[in-house]
Length: 267
Image 1: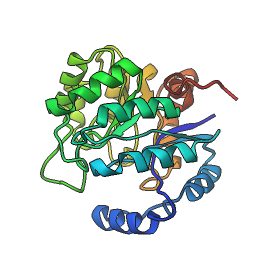
Image 2 (image 1 turned 30 degrees about the vertical axis):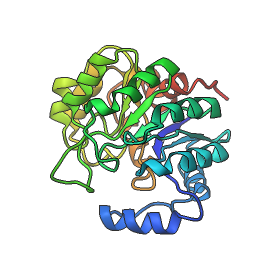
Image 3 (image 1 turned 60 degrees about the vertical axis):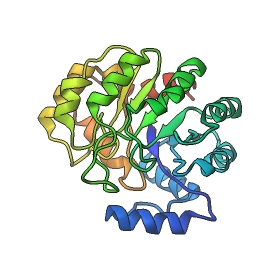
Image 4 (image 1 turned 90 degrees about the vertical axis):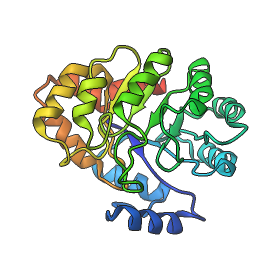
């Protein structure tokens, strides 16, 4: 079984516009057309059983629309997260709606939502998610949208964990895209519910520091993830299988750790 904990897709009415914009910003050729059906087709090609879709409310006004769509696409193969915006007056209330809808957590992207991860304006969101048991997936590290300013630094996430020790945090891109030395310093080995997903790291991270981070943080808190459509899960699956760890540890990363967070049973 394989669970991809970090994917993206868009509603049919906006998918073409969204994909064109993101492709231009990133300069990356996508592996799918950005639709849910396109994602499932690619999952089938890659042997992925379940994908977590992570929508992002880039404006306060998008929260309810995005979360309603996320509820609609929920299925036995798609586990959607919701999203709130730190500048939305009703962000905390919307978190209650996300919980009531049965969405699996919350996605925050400090770059696209234009806030520093440790800005205290986001703290009510972190507190409410702690209370509701909603995990947060954070974009972490570099993003091509704002190449000269990292909004989610590993040190900031270490501070958030210190301030909200009960919050389940999933830090994308192995804790900080292209900031892996800082991940090793501030995040790797942190106790509690701090997970690292490996999205878009295959071919980008050096083997030695990858091994050190996995060893320091432990295979119980590493998650298979691809960032599809911007990378194919085939690449991250291959990277995980190449690690010098036991088959049991590989299974933890490929799906068992994700099952615990998502509270789903093996099929």
